[in-house]
Length: 203
Ligand code: GDP
Ligand code: FE
Ligand code: FE
Image: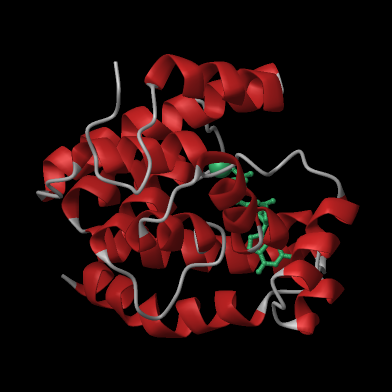
């Protein structure tokens, strides 16, 4: 079947799955299918009508994750992206720069879909419904197992903003614990959402 979502290019589901399985490890191929299934459920739950676009966002979000550092650096130069990005690594690049690879390989132009994939790791102070669905689905999909994932799963269906806040708080804590650098936009997301979690805990 072909995805009906109007995303700038017709995408045949079987072709997409074939391309994803060729580009991704078995584990990551399962992960993106899980994220797609979770994004679909969240879309239905929160009334995001373009359910197929949410699924596609899940399938495509880590498409560039196994590209080489050289590929990302070339894309940063080719598209004249912020040179500060060169100081980061695959964790940040696979979304923020990965959307250029996705545009090249699939001809996708839909800004809402690309934006959700762009910020799926780091969030934003201004997240739309699809952005939140993908950000949270990536964190809570069925194969994730870490302390707190059950809380994240229940928040995702109770209060989506609180789920974004919970995920961001725990990502920031995790990174600081590991003593690695935190991307500035991750902190901006944290500042924008942290109050939503406090409100939740009080109620
Ligand atoms: P995944 O691609 O499904 O593994 O999930 P994500 O795209 O959400 O995250 C990819 C990796 O980036 C994870 O290991 C996160 O802990 C890490 N990460 C998330 N935010 C930041 C950040 O601000 N700075 C750094 N250095 N790493 C981050
Ligand atoms: Fe990712
Ligand atoms: Fe992911």
